[in-house]
Image (cartoon, rainbow, N blue to C red; front, top):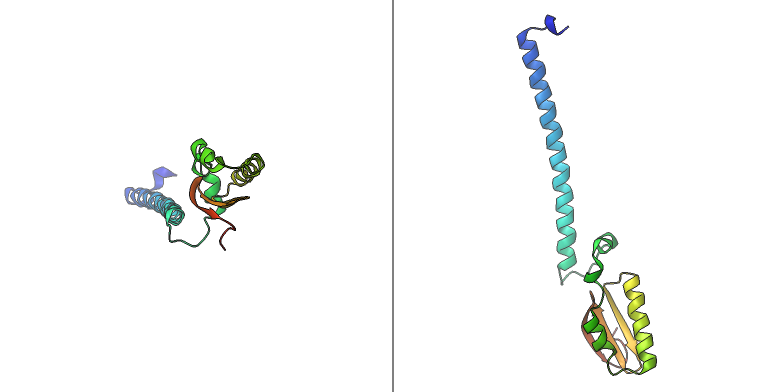
Length: 131
């Protein structure tokens, strides 16, 4: 069959195949670019401190645990000066928040509260947690 094709027809078939391969490559690159743009948007939203939207759960699930868990030094500071009962309660609150991968949460104790963001102490006070 190929013997019956003229050189012009073979050249046309090769050109069509090259065009098809180029089209497939273009579609794959476009899909990759869209995925990269979404990932960039998610990362930008994640680190934007002015963003009021919650971080999407699928982004948080991809985080390594050290990004949202409290360091030993911070934990020691948070627990310092608390009664033994409060130490146990605050430790349980921290463990529950970290187990559920919460990135922003409050822990409360008899004397007041602490605000925790990504494992870091970002606020605290006496009395009740602010609304």
